[in-house]
Length: 245
Length: 180
Image 1: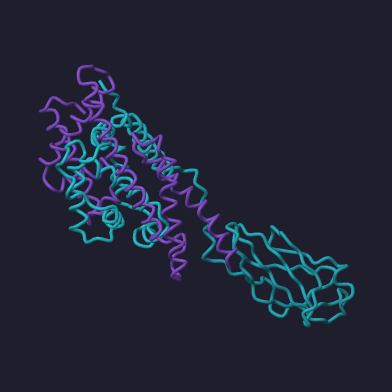
Image 2: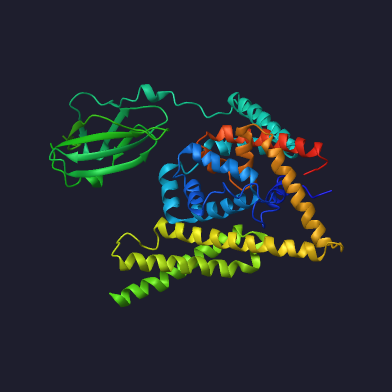
């Protein structure tokens, strides 16, 4: 019994048997209509009309010698630079139908059935786990203050604050941290405080030492929400006064 | 110019020789393996003659990459193969005459192989044309896309014709007592 590594290889060998004699094993039968080398080239290079190409292929089904010659010619045609350039230009680089057919043929082979069973199990497990996670109560909560992120000053209108106790207060989104910036009316930065957890801040006295009494100072708050977004307030102001006044 | 022409000749023919060797290494018929070098030399000589004739006549398009020269090489190869084949037929006839009453394993094996090949080709003639053409190209090593292009069919028709044609062929061979 012959080895079955390539079931068609035995047929191929049988097909070329007899090609070493003219007439392909049937002396005298095919010699008169054997195509010339030039016609073999023209057929393999697809220069002849389709009907003539098919006729030559049909001849090679009867004549082992011409089948062998055609195989040699076709190999040279396919190796020639002109054919390779034309093939690249004419055909898609990838034959999707051929690839798919070959791929599915291999996949359906009995050898791969255990692998298919394992893949199916993994897919089912994945779906189950994914569904379970959707019901997980430990999901981090969605921040609820996002819709109401406005920052408002809680100081009275036109406030006058002493430099020894300049307490700034505001209302802002829950769970946020705040950044406070104080400037002069000319927008020269006086002080900045970052990462404040409370919505109040007492301005250090030493920061205000150089500011003349009666000066108008501007202040602004920026909230950093838990989801990373930032919300800025409008600009508020207060008048700096001496405590003894 | 003359020296430049000589430089092109050496390097490009070396590359071309390499291409021919590669092609023949893949498809050289078994009975010609010991003649492969002669075949390559014959093809290269014919190509060189043709190229020089083109140069002498002033044809500008005959560079070494042109399909014309490859066509010349192919014709040279086939002519040489056919010449050797005719000579071999005469040698075999003489051998058969000389050994008519002596059995030898090589001779018997070769004869059996030829008989199987003959039966296979007769079975091919019994197939419908589409299957016959597709199987013939398949047995010559053509891939589905190449056969589809040559026969001007779509790949699916080629694949189906090969698949069904091989089944018919094996059935026919089996009916003649040949399992392949």
